[in-house]
Image (cartoon, rainbow, N blue to C red; front, side, top):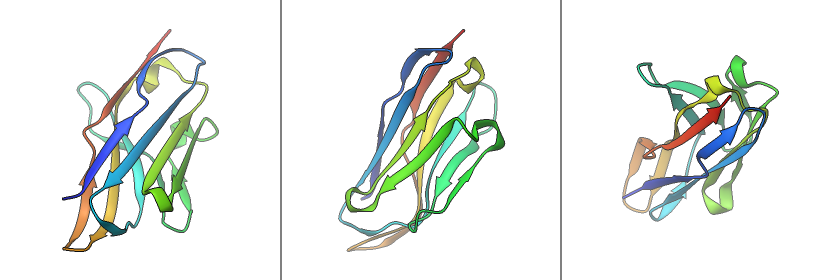
Length: 121
């Protein structure tokens, strides 16, 4: 079974930085795109940033120039460097992996459990 485990969330003051990590485990042979989504209280989950296996990236307009997504394919890990954080960035951040292939089966999509990021003003 494939699992995504996020880490790096926490409380930070406005203008500060955090780095989120998400490691995939489970006899993985290949992962397609990986991404980060956020869900604020009472709102729908929305894309923050995504990265393909080849390294092409895509960002929400609200985080362009402040957040950077990267991945280490050898470690099946994706990162989100968040700089110049704002109170409106406060949310639970979820890691997502698409097109996961293991030795036993494939998964269209896998989600992590989420990590809370709180930005104080």
